[in-house]
Length: 203
Image (cartoon, rainbow, N blue to C red; front, side):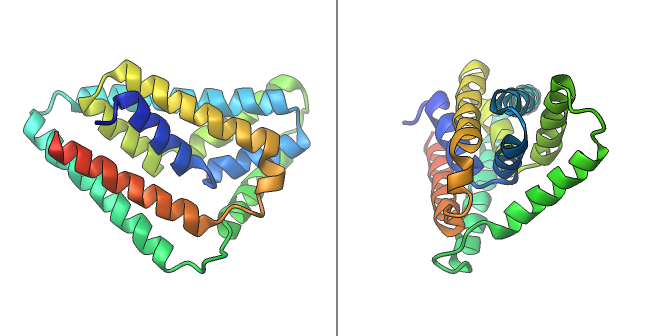
């Protein structure tokens, strides 16, 4: 059986690659200090993870039998939706739509940013990432995991997964941006959600 740490780590790492927040980090790192962008983006994702785990713990007060079936439903529905989306994508598709959304968001933020000092850049990276991540499927999945598993393990696994993706985005994102196959990532993500759904069902 997958541990809570491993499940969170795998889920976040695969799901966040090619996500909107990934490309926001890529584009911001092209214009500002990589260390600043890494710090701001990871701080936002860590804050979102902690809030999600707290929400999961609160929801965990609901009778376990209901939580059990809600978890299965969430993971299975996400998995089926992702596999369906992947089946409709061309084999060589890249995440062009997501990239354009990220570019637009960064361009708008750059216009509003009157000061270019480090604090302003750090706050911008934090706020843009936090807003983009709100309501994302990885946030909901983190909440679902936190209802049944160790909050410390889910928090640690999720933050480590976010750190890996953010590091990839900031350091090598420019090279990867045009080569990430959205179809492949979506397929892997869909399979992972289905696997987690099956694990929850068996437990």
